[in-house]
Image (tube, rainbow, N blue to C red):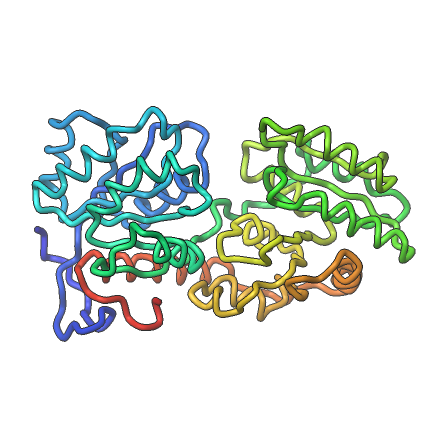
Length: 382
């Protein structure tokens, strides 16, 4: 192991002397269209820099052996994309890592919400892990309540950064132009970013728009994203809701936008971004972070327990700065509409997003190093 670069052991509980910088092998997928987990995986590898090598998930033992020779440990992020085509590879990676006496760290982004078959496939690998990083306290609690939880593993929470980062200002892109077309005679535009599916409660935004109109506000609604294909009639039911609220000529769905810069251009055409989640805001809502990074105020219902955000510095900074405005967790459409109306009247303060993101990634890497080295994470990590 290369020990030429040393960091202070003061970051790690119980450490009293410098410890060597770990070298990691980060397993990725071969996906071209990235899901949130895969995007995080690749960003993590990039922020580890020279301390990390990447390898696309493979059952080729020769390639794995060669890659494992250069590392101290392996990082797997779950759930992986195209999991039905990757039933064997994660297990092979985990077994080979253990045979080569390399530490295995799993980053768990979902658990109870996964189909039981997916959990069954992941379970052997997670069982073999030396340490588990959880993307949110809710995921940690789901794991700890399950019969599969192991009390002996080193665990920690990590904050998940937004997968989209602000880009130079653009305006003449198709989605932004289409949203701008909704603005007539001072009409305000509310909206949200992300895929449209039932659990996200996208139809709640239509109810909030209807309440704003009842209060005398001239508003339109823009959804920056596309419908998720499902067995239920997501799109048909959505349009039925639009008609029920009398918003037929006031609602736009942009469809999927591939370019990050185009997403931010579209977000900047909104006056306020608004989400109403069944469970309230959680640190897993990357779409809220991305929307707030656009400079637009985000109104959402707050978490059931504010402590659930305590591990996530960026969320806390944005709430304190007014980039994210919280209502009660169980706020109804009328209360949400009232907060949106107030948000129309003010802009959030300036926040150094680049600095906050750098601090977030430093936190992630510090916590990864702590659990990967077999140390208990400091109390603030839990």
